[in-house]
Image (cartoon, rainbow, N blue to C red; front, side, top):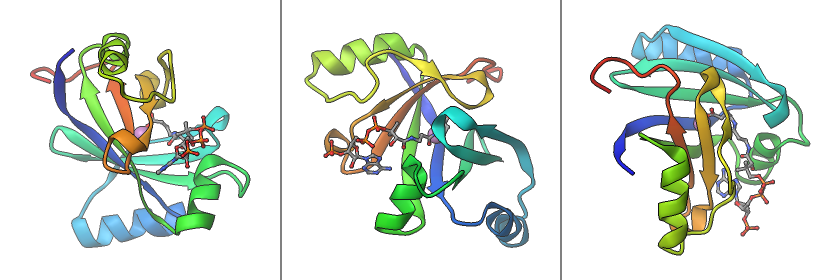
Length: 140
Ligand code: CMX
Ligand code: CO
């Protein structure tokens, strides 16, 4: 497998509208995508930052993964998305290296991308997400 880029950093926020306004005012960013992913219990907004994205995540309720994360640790860095050319191959390679996977098989994330989560214990305590873009930009 090939690591292409950092795809995104996922930041857990309590109030999405307030956070979007903050990024707009401070960094002059305009959201490029927003989506509710019911199956994962989150609403997201993406900002483009070069070839990468900043992903703001608001929980759909307290009893969701991001809701529990905020309850336990407060708002902050939730995960790092690593862009790879082939998520299925990346999972097989990581498993071969003894890395603990959360998702054994890829699934669909935001923007129709193929994703899989990898346990934080083998990635410096930070939850890792592998991302294979559905529509890569030219040069990515
Ligand atoms: N940071 C650090 N550790 C985390 C973590 C985080 N954000 N999320 C989970 N963990 C830890 C848990 O504490 C647990 O540790 P132990 O094995 O030591 O108990 C381990 O990782 C597994 O977590 P879990 O919640 O028990 O596992 P689940 O299978 O229930 O769910 C996960 C895992 C990561 C998918 C889910 O917790 C999650 O965060 N879902 C939200 C996903 C998301 O952000 N979706 C947005 C769209 C995706 C996209 O970017 O396209
Ligand atoms: Co993500």
